[in-house]
Image (tube, rainbow over all chains, first blue to last red; front, side, top):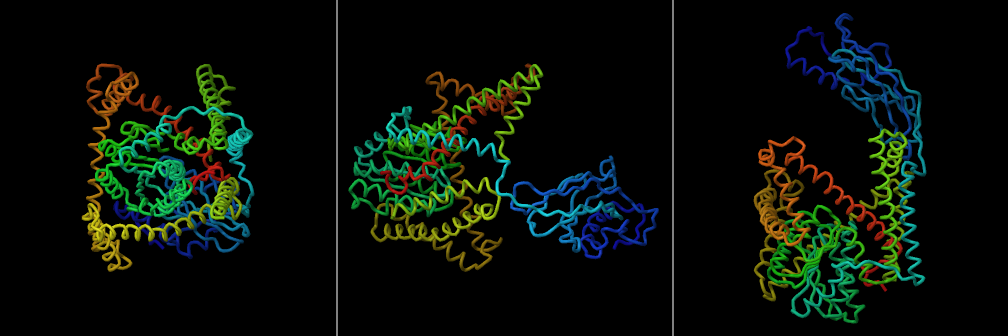
Length: 420
Length: 216
């Protein structure tokens, strides 16, 4: 407990007081009396010297919607003394009582805070909450909330629009896959970077130099790496047919294993399993710039005729691409990281921009089912284009001519397309 | 079976992952964390595969006196040095003041920084090629880059200080970055998102299987 203190304290002491008070407020002695009408930190302090603040009001505990019954949300109106300029509130202590048991301190909050999310609860218990408004020598409790039990739900209806959009896009992809399966010819535009794959492999064959395949620096849990490996599967088939050398240095052990399996299967499918060697794929290091140093060294020493950079790349993208450019290799790059695309465009012969990386495997396979999935994407693009045009027109008209209907349309679209 | 079982696992896990995004109920709410933990465990074991492979290839290079075998010696020595020092330090091998920390701070970090620093020179050479005004698009790129670069430094505003605030180079650079650049980047992002959906569906449904060795 704090001793009785004179009003005019030196600055340092007055700064320490709130800290000491918060430390002491963790003690069980204090937490026991939270429902008392007035709690004074030191009974020896006369009432005239107490700095008393009004309690918080409208303390409401509500179940967090759409979770597994583990979260309760609290909101309140801060003490009126907290809302005044130069108010005397130094913070709040939030207490929770489980199954009408002893209240325990769960959070120390700064002045001005008016909400809290209590997580990690049990849906088999009931909870009550109260907040103490703290001043330098006094704490004022709020009323206790009504008992509340967190509930769990099966479906997150906050994501209903997202589910609907996923259903439309997923459904259209499935529809076009089925359409293609029935034999309907689908038009897919030419992608220059993928048209050049045959030529790039052929060039390496003619020059008698190897092909270097770099699948990015992320692991198998990244879809860009997976997209890179699916393309590797197609390219390996061509390489096996042409009997060209391929080398694939990787920065992740799992990618090494997956890469080996992919190339091995391609050589088997081409009827040349004896030409495959585990040495085609080798692990270098997980470290970003260590990997770059090794790959650059390989490029300069081996002088590959063709370099594929397909996967997730970060700061190393330009270092790798420029070294490839320096040795005169034909380079085909692709990534879904927009920040790295300008580097590839500047330094490589062909660049697969974003979606083209994901389309590459389907495009190279020329299988109707795979091409159908690309067609399904176009429905999503058409939908996006329509929504963008409607949104731009609505916000322009709404703001320029103050049309409420247009502004509510903007709000609705924002609500539908924002993820929570 | 060698292909069917991975396809089945991929399909089931893919569908579960889609479902867990919309279902907050147990056990779906825990699946993301569980799968993530499983992946980390598998990856942790797989690192030995990678390290052993690196050593195997390096030793082969040295014993067979392949070209540039000297580099392989450096790899083996560095690997062994870091591993031995790390194990010798015990649990707190990453603490400040340990020999492992010294090697990391004064050998690895400067080497890594050196590689990163090379980027500055590569940016210059790539920019030189990209900004050559060969055609209309390249000229447009050159012009935009010129305005943005000049607008991002105080010189830009000094040169255009006599103009209204909204027309100074810093404002022009901000406009280019906020509107044409952002619009273009968002278009790419939308394409990427749709490409992701399509690729994921192909993999989940087993249409895409070239990563398992051919698609037929």
